Length: 214
Ligand code: ADP
Ligand code: ADP
Ligand code: ADP
Image 1 (tube, rainbow, N blue to C red):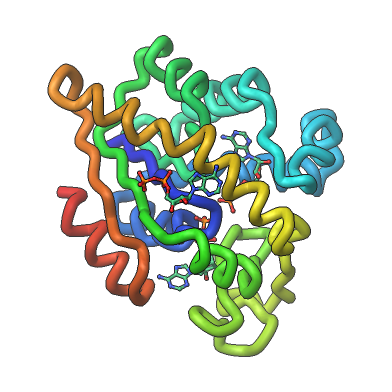
Image 2: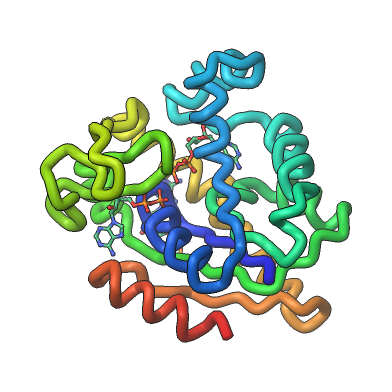
């Protein structure tokens, strides 16, 4: 099963991805997590993308497409995968069509912009695993610590309000058009598209996601 999670930054893609990967036994492919790991390691890729990421811009399609194509060749992707934060532009989606990577489900998690700003200002992450928390909406058991490892949680540098507004603008301009792109492929390909209302408890959204992935 090949699934794409679409949605604004902060819509809850990473949070729901953790459930979907466990439930269906498919790996989460988060281009954001992959890029952050490269930045942290100081690899050539990381050095290339560091500044654009911290400013809230989008990394070039060429870089992203190469990264994803290499990732989906790995053996753990044989039975499918979950794209989280990819594709983010029409050229990225077209690259998957050209590579004959057929998608089964496109789930758009829908959350209004003002809610997004509140969510991202309270977001805290466990860097090593990508697990996500929120200071108020989804707090860890011990303040500031990851539930499973006890490691300290961090705030992402691109989660400050001004950068969030820029990322939201890019979402509306560059990523939202993918909803129409995939909707237009329904019928002629196997893809099925669903819009999931993204406001409610993490559990409620999880149930909505599970209801459509059958
Ligand atoms: P969020 O879902 O909070 O917006 P991500 O972790 O998906 O954040 O992405 C963080 C940053 O990584 C983006 O702002 C962008 O700079 C870069 N990035 C991640 N995925 C892509 C992609 N598919 N195309 C271009 N840039 C990307
Ligand atoms: P994305 O991957 O789409 O950028 P995340 O999964 O990282 O989004 O979620 C963004 C923030 O919102 C995190 O702090 C997360 O804990 C919180 N969050 C996720 N789902 C919900 C929800 N249903 N209600 C409130 N906050 C949520
Ligand atoms: P819809 O959900 O109606 O298909 P959008 O998701 O593009 O359309 O728009 C949802 C909301 O986001 C609208 O209320 C609009 O004001 C706002 N919006 C649209 N484009 C942008 C943008 N480029 N930057 C910031 N906000 C935007």
